[in-house]
Image 1 (cartoon, rainbow, N blue to C red):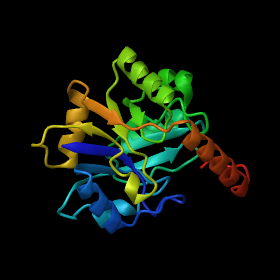
Image 2: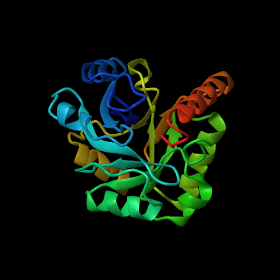
Image 3: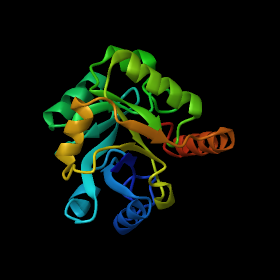
Image 4: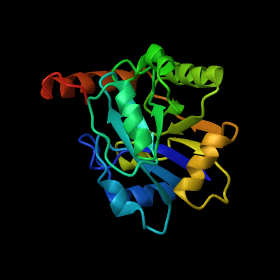
Length: 219
């Protein structure tokens, strides 16, 4: 089973994907499990959890004070803009796992120092919107320190869903089984596209413009 563990919906302030589009495009790309990781929002999961078509992991991409953290398996919204350790603690209190999201991304990653310094449960080793070099470094770091790995498309529009994923056994039937497998088994096969130079430049210009419109505030 393919599991895309980083997908945004229209509940993210920069997302476009509706609930039906998420299900449709996931099925179209052979994705059997999706972690809905909206930016600092937890609205999509209640609408998708009983869809009967694909497994949905309750999740969030949390903007900590130092960068983005993917919270997997949570049961509540995690507030933004808190210190890294406090964010991790709140994720654990909500029953979830804290993964350092795209740690080498210049705009929103935590950086290597923070990723090593704090007790993350794992590292997002591949991200469809990261550069090839950023993905290589993230995967190498995860393997070096023996942390569980995830991968995802980081899709903000439906046609990007499935551009990053992990391969898992087909007999997993719940999101709890998916996370248990990721946390307690050898690293799954990690697959992902990467964002190359032209797309990276477009993303940089877009991010700076949005940052200015937000009053120089992090996503």
